[in-house]
Length: 253
Image (cartoon, rainbow, N blue to C red; front, top):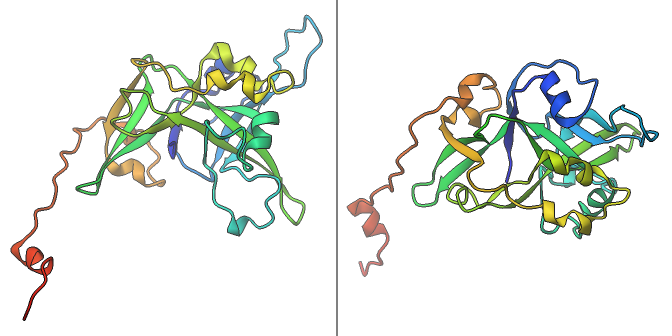
């Protein structure tokens, strides 16, 4: 899954990497969480042949997709992620997968390895070894409130983790290569079945997982310190006391 990510590259770097213009300067965002506004790249209006103008737009959307048919948002879960394997058929994502595919610029993401026995967790900052940007495959929806107010929303597509990342978590974001941006965003000629091959985990050896402190668990912690490397935790299973054992057995008295 993907529950937190970061965008610490500059507006100029976003423009160059994603082929967009008009990105306003923003401070580094080290700890982006659900419901917050995120930068999203979408397909632009087709240009005339020979035009050098970009065919992609960029805008802010709320991270947490709301399908257009939802009537009461209070009774609807926050769709931060969408499973790539079922997005084309699931009611919540089917329309967006066909008509509103998008890309979320990011510098990397966070994931937690949770130890079932000790019930402890270790956070990791996952980024390309080259420190380049990444583009999360995403789905967007325009939602209109009952009072007529519109809100653009987005969800990150996830897939089964590659072998080296599976020891941390069984799911990870779908990260598109720059050569595939155009095909992914082209919802006019590229149907969901035409882009299925893009919905895979990245190749092994491309990303590194850096153990970080629990600071990232709190949204209020939004500085570079959340990405500082730490020694990974050693999980210890609590030992049972003799009293615990007694409670676990039946007694005749």
